Length: 416
Ligand code: ASP
Ligand code: MG
Image 1 (cartoon, rainbow, N blue to C red):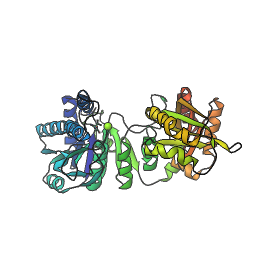
Image 2: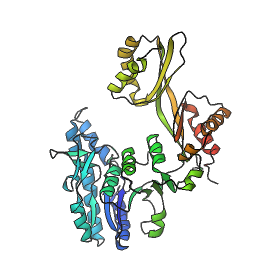
Image 3: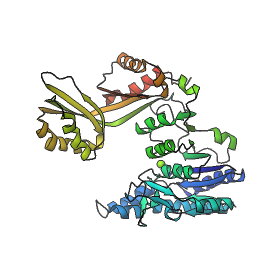
Image 4: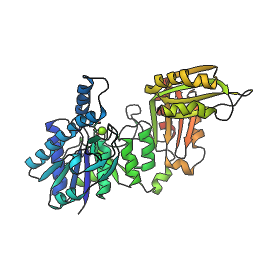
């Protein structure tokens, strides 16, 4: 018998009406003979509402208590879904993370899953029940409730699918799959029927916020066949059709995928660039600049060090825009006095645009095609970074949409 894990996001669980629709969909799978484990998110907006209650008391609430608080959102939606399933005539039971249990470390608000016990789940499944498990939460070695970080239900679902060796993990969400780029910017963007796990990782980390990045890492590490599909279709949609819809994340690189040079265009507006002008070009300088930045837990993305002129060089890097103030203070107080930089230049009006595709591995000249397309539009490239399956550029943010559209067209991704 086939075993599947379904994950429903907050929008899908957003009201009693929607929960009843989710139940109808699950009943369809159950009646077709599937064993179903369901991982719901909290009802839309609920996690934000709960966290705000705490922030209304103090600006820095204790993380353990935040997890105790935020985890209740999923307990509500899970119980309601089990009730809806029972009302539809299907035996169902819901569990909180600690009951299964989902064991995690004790990093409150961003805990990592250590192990999942499958005994309870398996025994319920074999007695014909649908098992509903709260997403987003677990229990630490001392019995305290933990949460997995915002968007963590995706990771809960993929993790439980991996432990149960599920045939597929279906992530139901309010989009109908992963697109070649954001359709709000490029209306010609297409849904990808399949995407390789590595491409998905690049797309997710570069700002296509369909899945929590950790869930993609998890799917890759444990090779969990994972499908992103719409929860907004008719719940009674033909099951065959539903099993073929959305985007499947695959681990085998089939030939068809190799044909495509570039599979998608990712972008991020949340970039900021800082440059230390005229620092001595000598061993240890990169470490003196980026060491303190790493120590302060600030993520650095692209790094460029220029050619030195009479022993001096310029050193630039990018950070997420919401860490910009933090990095500036650190540079002014600590780094600049230490490395004797002449000047600090900053730019918050930058964006990053990337072409992504496993086809780039076996083709040369892809990056230069990208640069040519951007130059034809008069877009200046400020920084470049590459990996085996990605080339990223930093450009002025007002040209971001033009760049995305241009590249989408250049690499033949526009819907015909
Ligand atoms: N409810 C949690 C959140 O809003 C987890 C999730 O939805 O995945 O972040
Ligand atoms: Mg989500």
